[in-house]
Length: 76
Image (cartoon, rainbow, N blue to C red; front, side, top):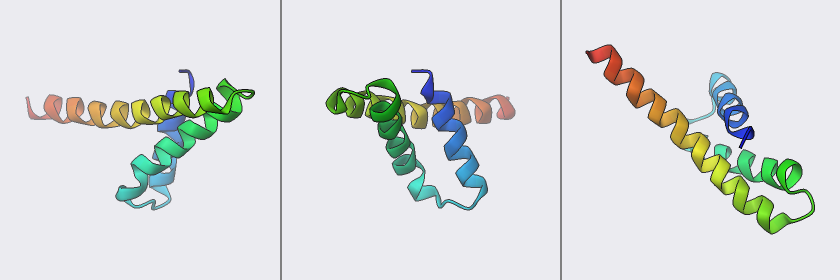
């Protein structure tokens, strides 16, 4: 699960290069699956894909959850 902050950082960097908002979750999941297959479970692609899905979806939720918390802090 160490890759989750890396995925968040990579997606954030791609946002800076003009990646459209609708592609953010897709890129997050693709990076998670790639990291799961290549780094976490290199010999077992099924486990790599499943763990990658979890990491990609978690990275997307981590970013959106943090954004909601930051927005609520600014309002108060």
